[in-house]
Figure 1 (cartoon, chains in turn cyan, orange):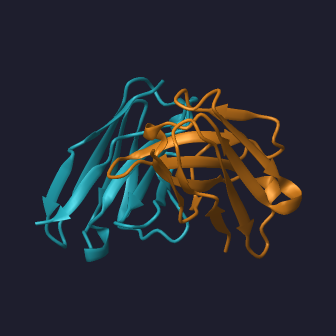
Figure 2 (cartoon, each protein chain N blue to C red):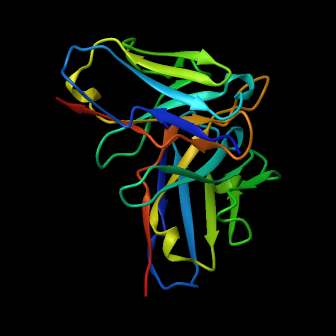
Length: 108
Length: 125
């Protein structure tokens, strides 16, 4: 099973700031099948990025994904008020599909 | 737009059973084209993949934590996917989300692009 470790656990930031979230895999993710999700309180998760770097439909271009192999990142170029949420990475390169433990981005 | 609506959650005693359903709808949506999944989230915790089923229903996958206790199935004629849960434990308490994995070519990529709102399962005596 591939274990995904996200860092940091929590980030305290202000609107307008740039942020990069990390997701590290215990072994290489096949085909770079790595996705990112955003979850706001009381809501279902929302797909942001798949295939490590492809933005999902309707996702603003301030969100970008990068990385390959075992090291991946999600960057938000300028934080908007609605971006304060929890972010999860997920790999589907090999079964069982696994999620990271999440990174909380909170308002400073 | 595709919509997924879960039902069947509730309060059940340890050792009991429950059957979750998920109905898919939307214009231009072909349910039999898509792989389907269940993902759960325990109170205050992160996301955990539970089970997946291929478009045809022939291939099924389970997390070790539910293998042998949960069974996933689908009815393409009714645009529905199900999760039969038995021998339930307190640690199965969670919101259960029905989730779509879209058809991808040339390789199947089991990412989750459409989520239902979830149904709450509580296992307690």
